[in-house]
Length: 118
Length: 114
Image (cartoon, rainbow over all chains, first blue to last red):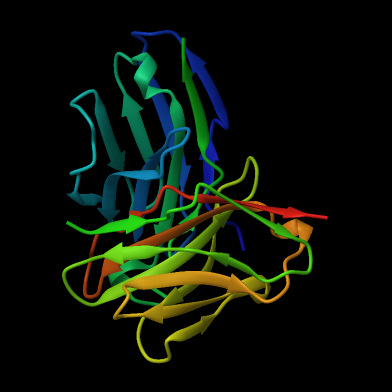
Protein backbone atom coordinates (compact mmCIF):
# COMPACT_ATOMS: atom_id res chain seq x y z
CA UNK A 1 0.00 0.00 0.00
CA UNK A 2 0.94 3.67 -0.21
CA UNK A 3 3.33 4.99 2.37
CA UNK A 4 3.58 8.41 3.95
CA UNK A 5 4.03 11.11 1.33
CA UNK A 6 5.29 14.64 1.78
CA UNK A 7 5.36 17.65 -0.49
CA UNK A 8 7.26 19.47 -1.70
CA UNK A 9 10.40 17.34 -1.59
CA UNK A 10 12.52 20.47 -1.69
CA UNK A 11 11.70 24.06 -0.83
CA UNK A 12 13.99 27.05 -1.17
CA UNK A 13 12.68 30.28 0.26
CA UNK A 14 13.89 33.69 1.27
CA UNK A 15 14.24 34.78 4.85
CA UNK A 16 11.01 36.30 6.11
CA UNK A 17 8.69 34.37 3.78
CA UNK A 18 6.07 31.89 4.98
CA UNK A 19 6.18 28.24 3.92
CA UNK A 20 3.70 25.35 4.08
CA UNK A 21 4.77 21.73 4.19
CA UNK A 22 2.29 18.96 3.57
CA UNK A 23 2.04 15.41 4.86
CA UNK A 24 -0.28 12.62 3.70
CA UNK A 25 -0.21 9.79 6.24
CA UNK A 26 -0.91 6.12 5.67
CA UNK A 27 -4.61 5.44 5.38
CA UNK A 28 -6.05 4.29 8.72
CA UNK A 29 -3.26 5.80 10.81
CA UNK A 30 -4.77 8.08 13.42
CA UNK A 31 -1.50 9.36 14.84
CA UNK A 32 0.71 11.80 12.96
CA UNK A 33 4.04 13.30 13.99
CA UNK A 34 6.29 16.05 12.68
CA UNK A 35 10.04 16.02 13.27
CA UNK A 36 12.93 18.20 12.19
CA UNK A 37 16.29 16.76 11.22
CA UNK A 38 19.24 19.11 11.08
CA UNK A 39 22.72 18.18 9.90
CA UNK A 40 24.55 16.33 12.63
CA UNK A 41 21.51 16.32 14.88
CA UNK A 42 19.04 13.62 15.72
CA UNK A 43 15.37 13.92 15.07
CA UNK A 44 13.80 16.83 16.92
CA UNK A 45 10.16 16.22 17.81
CA UNK A 46 7.84 19.07 16.84
CA UNK A 47 4.19 18.04 17.26
CA UNK A 48 1.91 15.02 17.62
CA UNK A 49 -1.65 14.66 16.34
CA UNK A 50 -4.18 12.07 17.40
CA UNK A 51 -7.00 12.48 14.94
CA UNK A 52 -7.43 16.19 14.34
CA UNK A 53 -6.30 17.32 17.76
CA UNK A 54 -2.75 18.00 18.84
CA UNK A 55 -2.30 16.85 22.44
CA UNK A 56 1.44 17.41 22.32
CA UNK A 57 2.80 20.58 20.75
CA UNK A 58 5.72 20.79 23.12
CA UNK A 59 8.36 20.55 20.41
CA UNK A 60 7.34 23.56 18.34
CA UNK A 61 10.37 25.84 18.66
CA UNK A 62 8.55 29.18 18.46
CA UNK A 63 5.18 30.73 17.73
CA UNK A 64 6.25 31.06 14.10
CA UNK A 65 5.59 27.33 13.79
CA UNK A 66 2.08 25.93 13.62
CA UNK A 67 0.41 22.81 12.29
CA UNK A 68 -3.06 21.57 11.60
CA UNK A 69 -4.67 18.36 10.55
CA UNK A 70 -8.02 18.06 8.84
CA UNK A 71 -10.30 15.08 8.34
CA UNK A 72 -7.98 12.98 10.44
CA UNK A 73 -5.71 12.72 7.43
CA UNK A 74 -3.61 15.40 5.74
CA UNK A 75 -1.48 17.68 7.89
CA UNK A 76 0.16 20.99 7.08
CA UNK A 77 3.12 22.44 8.94
CA UNK A 78 3.40 26.20 8.51
CA UNK A 79 6.47 28.26 9.27
CA UNK A 80 5.93 32.00 9.27
CA UNK A 81 8.64 34.59 8.72
CA UNK A 82 11.24 31.92 8.04
CA UNK A 83 14.74 32.29 9.45
CA UNK A 84 17.98 30.72 8.27
CA UNK A 85 18.06 28.49 11.34
CA UNK A 86 14.81 26.91 10.13
CA UNK A 87 16.76 25.23 7.33
CA UNK A 88 16.47 21.47 7.87
CA UNK A 89 14.73 18.36 6.66
CA UNK A 90 11.19 18.17 7.99
CA UNK A 91 9.95 14.62 8.43
CA UNK A 92 6.41 13.43 8.92
CA UNK A 93 5.50 10.05 10.38
CA UNK A 94 2.25 8.24 11.07
CA UNK A 95 1.15 5.26 13.14
CA UNK A 96 -2.02 3.52 14.21
CA UNK A 97 -1.60 5.28 17.56
CA UNK A 98 -4.31 5.02 20.17
CA UNK A 99 -6.73 3.53 17.66
CA UNK A 100 -4.89 0.25 18.06
CA UNK A 101 -4.25 -2.00 15.12
CA UNK A 102 -1.07 -3.94 14.45
CA UNK A 103 2.05 -2.41 15.95
CA UNK A 104 0.36 0.82 17.09
CA UNK A 105 3.64 2.25 18.29
CA UNK A 106 5.61 1.82 15.10
CA UNK A 107 5.99 5.07 13.20
CA UNK A 108 6.28 5.07 9.42
CA UNK A 109 8.16 8.00 7.96
CA UNK A 110 7.78 9.99 4.78
CA UNK A 111 10.76 10.96 2.62
CA UNK A 112 10.88 14.46 4.11
CA UNK A 113 10.90 18.02 2.84
CA UNK A 114 14.28 19.69 2.61
CA UNK A 115 13.80 23.36 3.50
CA UNK A 116 16.50 25.88 2.66
CA UNK A 117 16.10 29.45 3.86
CA UNK A 118 18.39 31.89 2.07
CA UNK B 1 13.53 13.36 30.96
CA UNK B 2 14.27 10.46 28.68
CA UNK B 3 17.32 10.34 26.46
CA UNK B 4 19.17 8.15 24.00
CA UNK B 5 22.92 8.05 23.46
CA UNK B 6 24.61 6.71 20.36
CA UNK B 7 28.26 7.14 21.32
CA UNK B 8 29.71 6.55 17.86
CA UNK B 9 29.14 9.05 15.07
CA UNK B 10 30.48 6.52 12.56
CA UNK B 11 31.21 2.80 12.51
CA UNK B 12 33.36 1.23 9.81
CA UNK B 13 33.27 -2.51 9.22
CA UNK B 14 34.54 -4.79 6.48
CA UNK B 15 32.00 -6.62 4.37
CA UNK B 16 31.31 -10.05 5.82
CA UNK B 17 32.37 -9.10 9.34
CA UNK B 18 29.93 -8.80 12.23
CA UNK B 19 28.72 -5.31 13.05
CA UNK B 20 27.53 -3.62 16.21
CA UNK B 21 25.95 -0.19 16.52
CA UNK B 22 25.70 0.92 20.13
CA UNK B 23 22.77 2.52 21.91
CA UNK B 24 22.13 3.31 25.55
CA UNK B 25 19.04 4.93 26.96
CA UNK B 26 17.70 6.66 30.04
CA UNK B 27 14.02 6.57 30.93
CA UNK B 28 12.02 6.62 34.16
CA UNK B 29 10.04 3.45 33.66
CA UNK B 30 9.70 0.52 31.32
CA UNK B 31 10.83 1.37 27.81
CA UNK B 32 9.88 0.58 24.29
CA UNK B 33 13.01 0.65 22.15
CA UNK B 34 13.33 1.03 18.39
CA UNK B 35 15.91 0.99 15.63
CA UNK B 36 15.37 2.86 12.40
CA UNK B 37 17.59 3.07 9.30
CA UNK B 38 17.87 5.99 6.90
CA UNK B 39 19.28 5.44 3.44
CA UNK B 40 20.61 8.47 1.54
CA UNK B 41 17.90 10.93 0.51
CA UNK B 42 15.16 8.75 1.98
CA UNK B 43 13.00 8.78 5.07
CA UNK B 44 13.54 6.57 8.08
CA UNK B 45 12.57 2.92 7.83
CA UNK B 46 11.59 0.80 10.80
CA UNK B 47 14.01 -2.05 11.53
CA UNK B 48 12.93 -3.59 14.82
CA UNK B 49 11.56 -2.87 18.26
CA UNK B 50 11.57 -4.21 21.79
CA UNK B 51 8.25 -4.15 23.60
CA UNK B 52 8.43 -6.91 26.18
CA UNK B 53 9.39 -10.55 26.50
CA UNK B 54 12.46 -12.01 24.83
CA UNK B 55 15.44 -9.71 25.20
CA UNK B 56 16.77 -10.65 21.76
CA UNK B 57 14.72 -9.02 19.04
CA UNK B 58 15.04 -9.96 15.38
CA UNK B 59 14.16 -7.50 12.66
CA UNK B 60 14.41 -6.74 8.98
CA UNK B 61 17.40 -7.45 6.74
CA UNK B 62 19.01 -9.87 9.22
CA UNK B 63 19.45 -7.30 11.98
CA UNK B 64 18.89 -8.06 15.63
CA UNK B 65 19.17 -6.16 18.89
CA UNK B 66 19.53 -7.21 22.50
CA UNK B 67 17.74 -5.42 25.31
CA UNK B 68 19.91 -5.29 28.42
CA UNK B 69 18.00 -3.74 31.30
CA UNK B 70 20.90 -3.68 33.76
CA UNK B 71 23.14 -1.86 31.30
CA UNK B 72 20.26 0.17 29.81
CA UNK B 73 21.48 -0.76 26.36
CA UNK B 74 19.91 -1.83 23.10
CA UNK B 75 22.80 -2.49 20.70
CA UNK B 76 22.06 -3.31 17.07
CA UNK B 77 23.90 -6.27 15.59
CA UNK B 78 24.28 -8.27 12.40
CA UNK B 79 26.43 -11.38 11.99
CA UNK B 80 27.71 -10.52 8.50
CA UNK B 81 27.68 -6.97 7.11
CA UNK B 82 26.75 -6.15 3.52
CA UNK B 83 27.83 -3.08 1.56
CA UNK B 84 24.13 -2.32 1.15
CA UNK B 85 23.83 -1.97 4.94
CA UNK B 86 25.73 1.34 4.71
CA UNK B 87 23.32 3.93 6.03
CA UNK B 88 22.45 6.11 9.03
CA UNK B 89 21.01 4.24 12.00
CA UNK B 90 18.86 5.78 14.71
CA UNK B 91 17.97 4.32 18.09
CA UNK B 92 14.80 5.57 19.81
CA UNK B 93 13.06 5.15 23.15
CA UNK B 94 9.66 5.87 24.65
CA UNK B 95 7.86 4.90 27.81
CA UNK B 96 5.26 2.16 27.71
CA UNK B 97 1.58 3.01 27.91
CA UNK B 98 -0.71 5.26 25.92
CA UNK B 99 0.81 8.15 24.02
CA UNK B 100 4.41 8.78 24.94
CA UNK B 101 6.86 10.99 23.10
CA UNK B 102 9.57 9.14 21.21
CA UNK B 103 13.12 10.38 21.71
CA UNK B 104 15.66 9.64 18.99
CA UNK B 105 19.42 9.44 19.22
CA UNK B 106 21.67 11.53 17.00
CA UNK B 107 22.36 8.64 14.66
CA UNK B 108 25.35 6.48 13.75
CA UNK B 109 26.66 6.32 10.22
CA UNK B 110 27.53 2.76 9.27
CA UNK B 111 30.06 2.34 6.50
CA UNK B 112 30.59 -1.20 5.20
CA UNK B 113 33.82 -1.45 3.27
CA UNK B 114 33.98 -3.89 0.34
